[in-house]
Image (cartoon, rainbow, N blue to C red; front, side, top):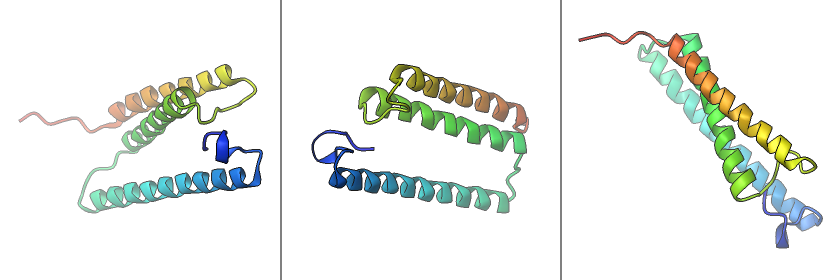
Length: 121
């Protein structure tokens, strides 16, 4: 997860320990964000918010796709922190970005198709 140069090289024990810690912290932050999101969703449903399955699934897929796009562009392309597959960087990084775009656009379409129609006042 960290740059593979200097003190963070994956070829040393200290570098592996640093990378393992960074990866663990990333997963911990992701877990906390997911818990916050589920708590907000639960609170909204308890207050009477309608929960359409297609709408929710679409938003989840779109969020997953947005994460893939941001992570793929920032970490893989700009910072070159790591790649999906170091043996075939261009192919796998491109497929990762394409998957992100498909999830984002498909999720958005699914969410829109499952959303409750808006009332006209």
